[in-house]
Length: 184
Ligand code: AMP
Image 1 (cartoon, helix red, strand yellow):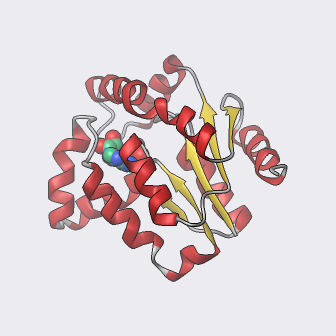
Image 2 (tube, helix red, strand yellow):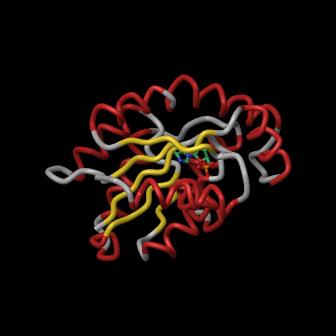
C-alpha cells in the first residue's frame, strides 16, 4: 500500500512525474485538474461550474473538490494505494483528506521544488487554454497564499520531504523514488 501526495506549484512537473510514478508503483494517478478537465470536456454540470473558475486561474470550491476526491478514493483500484496530484491545495482540503483516510494516513507527501520564473516559462510553453499570463500570475499568488502553508501542515501531520525539481524528467524521478523507497 503506497499512499502518496505530490505537492508543488503548477508547472513544477507534478503531472509528468505522477504518470511515471503511477506506472512504477502500479497505483492510480489521481489528478483533480485532469478530473475537472474531463468534466469540462464532457460538458457535465460540474464541468460547467468549474470552467470559468479554472480559466481565471482561481481555485474550485473545497466542497466540490472534496466531493470528487471522496468518490474517486472510494473506487476499488484506490485500495492498493494512490498518487494525489494537484490535491490538496488548501488547508480545508488537506484536513478533509486526512479525515477521509482516517484511521490510516498518507505514507509520504513530496514537494517538488521549482522557482517561480522556471514554472512560469514552463506553463507558457505548454500552452493550455488556462495558461494565460494573468491566470498563471493568479495561480502563483494562490499557491503562495493557500497551498504553500500546507507544507508545514504535512510536515507536522505525516511524513514529508522536498526534492529539487530542476533537471531532466528522469533525474527528478530518481530523486522522488529514492525518497519514497527510503521512507521509514
Ligand atoms: P491543475 O491541472 O492541477 O493545474 O489544475 C487546473 C485547475 O483546476 C486549477 O487552476 C484550478 O482552477 C482547478 N483545480 C485543480 N485541482 C484543484 C484543487 N485541488 N482545488 C481547487 N481547484 C483545483
